[in-house]
Amino acid sequence: MRRARLALPLLAVTVVVGLAGLATRSRADDLDLPATLDGIKTALAEKRYGRAQGDLQLVLAEVARLRTEVLKARLPAAPEGWKAEEAEGQDAAALAALGGGTVVRRPYTKGEARVTVELMVGASMWSAPLQTLLSNPAFLGAGLKPVTVKGRRGLLELRPDDKRATLQLLLNNVANGVLRIDGEGVTRDDVEKTFGNAFDFDAAEKAAAE
Picture (cartoon, rainbow, N blue to C red):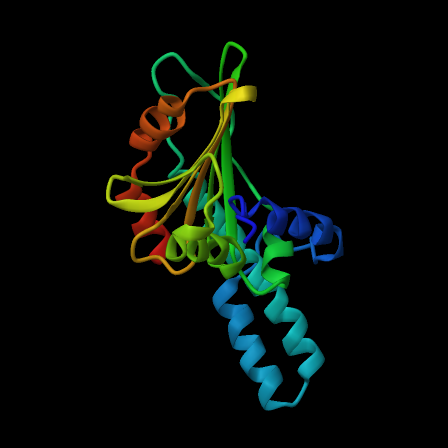
């Protein structure tokens, strides 16, 4: 039977990026969430469903944006010897339009080496492939190793020929939560120890669950 390589969630993220342009991007910077929610209740009572749906989309997009900002702050500072770029979030409106989920990432560099730490929560399209492979180790291909980092289970994919390594870990007590650390020009220790240990899982899990 053909062995599968790690089904990385970047494919799902790429789909989201492609649909981002179709999502509602406009929102009022001064959107009053409680008042808008009250307006949705009123619209429903009056059977003004188009108005209720439009306002609900605005609320979902704004809540997604606020959650993105919280999770961006949970990405680690640069480990010693590394430089960190600005943290960024996936298009919150696009993700909200697809039913939820939050993606934040932060790149780091050291000379020619580059690492991207990506936190993905709230959508099964990111966690399901990883959970499937962890539950069926017979399907793991060459270069894939089950690992545990700070009590979180995951898979490490090593590609030494091109000096790349990818670590994916399931978050504890967070539905559909995955931490992905992808490195170019790096060693196993760079992604598993340096960045894996630099990540504050407890704080990120708490923020993701709230």
